[in-house]
Image 1 (cartoon, rainbow, N blue to C red):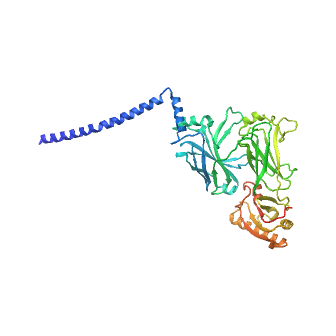
Image 2: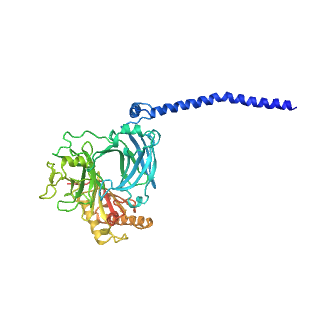
Image 3: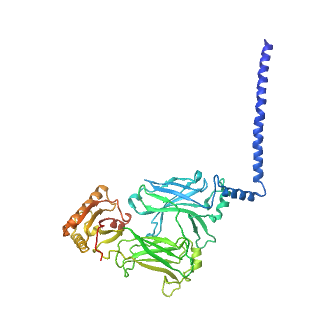
Length: 498
């Protein structure tokens, strides 16, 4: 019996040893292969020609038409969307996976304030195949305080911020160059401030639109032409004209041989005797690489004597101030030409200045109201302090006189067609007060105007109240709120303009 048990245990031990011998060669072979690969990798990493190897690898990736290619010619397309309390980013690029892009939003993107205020500034990591998808916060209170105000949404990539821990850092550094000097394409922006010994280059895609929930901002390539032949010469010139007007902005488009990155300022003056422009602060535009610029300037009213003044001065704020001041002089003293004049009498400092007449189609309007245009539509803006007592809808005597003047003006102009009368308030108070107040004010202006015209059948009327939801200025200031409290009369029919 004991002998049988011994034989049984012996067989089991022998069987287990046999199984162990059969699997061990495979495991040893796998470990040997891994060790050999590790040794080969170590030899590459410790090679005395390490830098050459890295450059060859980077060149190979840059030229390889297949796979995850890193190119200095940066492409970006997509959109950013304003949501209730976020900015949603949905874009594509050829940036490497894992790098960080920065998303910013700016209030006052055209100027008209001391500075263009940064609202948000957050990063998003680039995903596979260059996809940029994510969101950053957005202050929902702006939908009330700054509804319809323009905002700039911007996506940037700065090569100086790449982490040394990125698995492809060496390749990226080799291809993009120090401070992005090898960047190519329409999204490249050069910054070369005075006091710096070399320029930096960033990738920048942006779009401007109104502050509204659901508003989409398209990120796309901007077409840039060639600069003029005399680009950068000290004998400077600027050609500019008004190319469009809406009920808030006059749009000035221009071309010049001034340098890329130079900042131009602009404002609207009601007449030659006005000491200040219609805006407290100037509006701004940067000269682009091809010498073009576009400057929207907010205006309160078009007048027959009005004009736009555009100017520039020596300043450290120019985006390429180091290059600009080296060429034009620290006080623009090297400049010459018809648009160059002394900034101060008896001083060496010079400035660039030109004026553009407004030349509105409608050269007159009733007193005590502002006039704006959008295409063929003309708008008469009647401030509420002339028409009503604060918080009331009954029309004051002074208001009745102003409305009577509108009726006479319409008949003198032989106007026929649609008359839209819209009431508006600021955002002070509840909507259940502001909305009916705007409707009642519009209705009372309609009734009063209709009573003053000789033949109401010549017109079709549309009367609405919009409450606080169609502001033309910020509700953050007393002046802005006062502008938002108004009644508008919109005209789009036939009119004698002689």
